[in-house]
Length: 286
Image 1 (tube, rainbow, N blue to C red):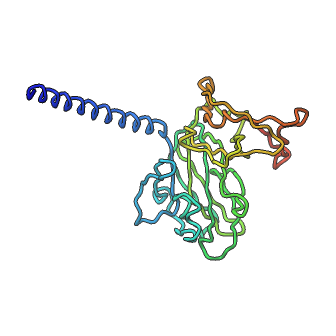
Image 2 (image 1 turned 180 degrees about the vertical axis):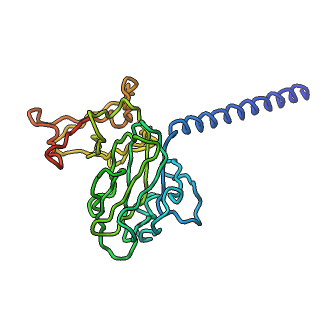
């Protein structure tokens, strides 16, 4: 009995050893897979205090953010009102603002010829105590991107293929002091979001659902942000099956494909599209 007991204990030790190895291997696999999924991601927390850790892992997404201080030499740092911090993720609670100069530019190293999703976040949060929403312009190098009115929009996105290894992202003063909360740059397959010429400004990105959940990484491997959208005159349909997305370079999140919608009245259109901002704009629907 004693011998048998010792043998069983030895077997238990071996089993625990195998379990530990298997667990460690699983953790390593998960870590490697996540690192591969975010390879090339650039996530800058603009205005992060020098006294705070950089880089750090943002808890909601698991993405790693770094201070923007190595990418720009101008500007001052601030923080949104403390009472508003709970409404935003950590990278959106700080700002870098530019009270001096007309044009202030970030210089970010990228891969020439790569298709990038570039996203700028600007959460005013009354960081300056003035309670006046700033309005200013964004440029990529010498080229105008958009006007950012922080009373209406806090997020702007563009698909852009850099022609050099340095991306100059510039904030230009018009009528008020420019500021920025976060810069998020994500590499994409070059055979996705193809245009005949030029960069592609994102107008909107929706998925049809009754929920109010905003989708992004990790549900979306490219960290595209999907806003929920639904109309009362729609009929929601859904599936619990896995949708095959392997044939597409877009690699759409499962949740965006499992809850399509159809008009309750089959003779009605599903969506009425708005006219573009300028008459010579081209509109792409993906």
